[in-house]
Image (cartoon, rainbow, N blue to C red; front, side):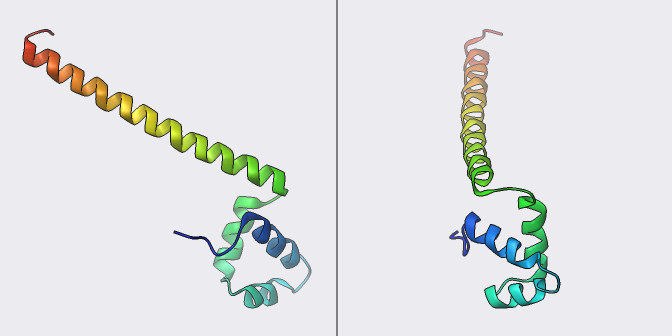
Length: 89
């Protein structure tokens, strides 16, 4: 799934929407719903581009580690089944 906006663009939209009365206009200009605006605001509030990059890097690393753990769990389960078939408990 390709995202429409990069994190830097999202931060710019949020920054523009902070001006009094500007949120509705900014949402309309960029074609995003207010629900999306508030979701972004909740997620990226108080972040600068460096923090967003760091967060994305950590999310990718977390996903990779979850896959590694899942693979080890599957291998462990397979070994347990093999040992049970061989009569080793």
